[in-house]
Image 1: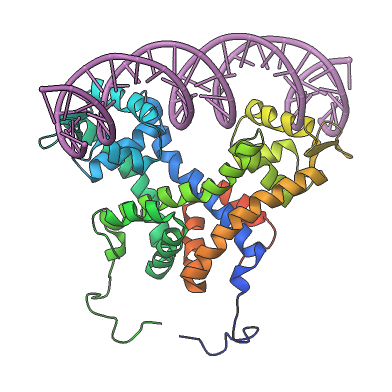
Image 2: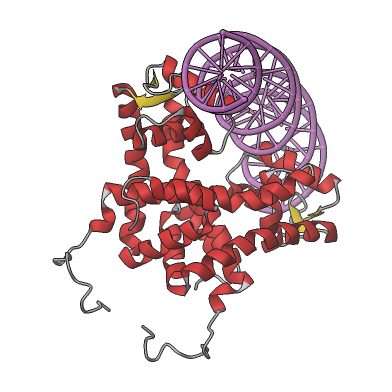
Length: 170
Length: 170
DNA sequence: TTGGAAAGTCAACATCGCTGACATAAAATC
DNA sequence: GATTTTATGTCAGCGATGTTGACTTTCCAA
């Protein structure tokens, strides 16, 4: 795996990528990239009366149709009061349907309506376009590394949610 | 560069990493990783009276001592009113010093005081610890890819700020 | 000297987090 | 069957952080 000629300073360990400077650059990369990552959906959401919280709810309901409020709560990492405010407007506006659970009637299973699915598509089209452009620029090897680092950065509990989504592995 | 034997399905193009599924997984990776990325500093900031906005200001003032309010404004992507509220508390609390510009006396050059530098260290120690663990787990090749994708994702204007920070390239 | 840029400030507002308290319905348990 | 626990919803209030708009002060530069 080691390219001949690229040796130079690596005398066996080569932990130069773990210097504080490299770590700080990584921190800044996360900051600036996340700003860009949310910019396009935010712009679209302004046209509706929604915010980033609505986008997140819509995203995960689309990904796991029928998921319960409690599960969504844990994924998003917010309180039920906070989520409820968001969820109520989405239900009232006819973007989300909350069906009473078949097995456990206390639960609500969440689904996107057609209108909800339409907004989801508009939002994720924009977000995927940027992601696709970045992926294409960086190439498949870089993308694999990107995913590996992000996954290693997650809290274990959240990582399980991440991995449990469709298309689990690589 | 192409490893013999890893061919399989790549008949020349192999754009499987650009499928919508892969892009959605990338989006979710960004979401969950960013949550983790901010969790440690957020926990520390609770002990003081500060929030994430204070952290960001402190971070960039530490990175570019003497930067002006206007520059910081553009980096953070917020309004001057929003930043001013944050900056005022930091100045009042003696964490940041705002020196009147030598050349242009309208400008304020921002510096961390010793107390400010102490908090910066506490915050970035925590954040770097997580980043370091993720880097170590993923390895140098993955880290390079991670940085490449994030950089490609940024808005061009923000990318220039990112690149202008110390230790610019890789 | 005048125009405009940099900075500070005040007011008002929206989003989206939070806690606390309470209600309801249904499942689970004793 | 009675009690407890769980899932959800809701109300009230608060805090951090973003926004616009309007205004002032300072001061560089044409």
